[in-house]
Length: 277
Image 1 (cartoon, one colour):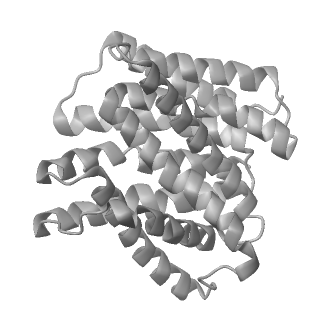
Image 2 (image 1 turned 60 degrees about the horizontal axis):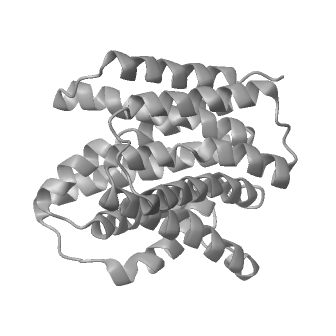
């Protein structure tokens, strides 16, 4: 079980690099869907090689196709669409704030779908995480009703990833599940893509595909074999702390005292959620 928690933490650390790579890529004037499509496509290449080396079958059985279409639509296409639309009509900070309402949804989903217990410790952890994210985003409260709706929906679809992934890894290897959901997700993204990208952007796209996509999701899907989705979702909210730390180190972005307190609340919530009571 402890190994599973470590894998979730490492996955969240990988996801925390997403904003760093995105910041570099937006300098090339790429559209959001172009970045997302190439992120998914290059990750598929990494996964294909990885699965072949392991000797794991690549494609899912035909009878599992409907499940993976739903998985890809809600947790790849719809999630990315809602998240980036929230960024467009509000701000990155507000979008991240809304995204990390996911642990609250995950606790409910875990109870309804997987019969996971809702303990006082889980509720405390969720409260700490949401409070911490609020403090991390103290300047992002100028938003519209549409932004709130889109943002909350992005948090919902983000939570659904954990639900679908936990179902998927019961029958398929984590890497095989990831390959197929990304493959179908890439098909959903096709109509929105501008395929032309500068050569100088390729290394950043490859890094984006490898670290926060291939490595991050493989670690997280593997962890879901032994960790409840409600616990994994809360632990994964260490991601904004990692992102802000990297932004400070690489770009010199400063952390205020309130933001440091918020980061501490998220870390505390991630630790508390490991309690077995």
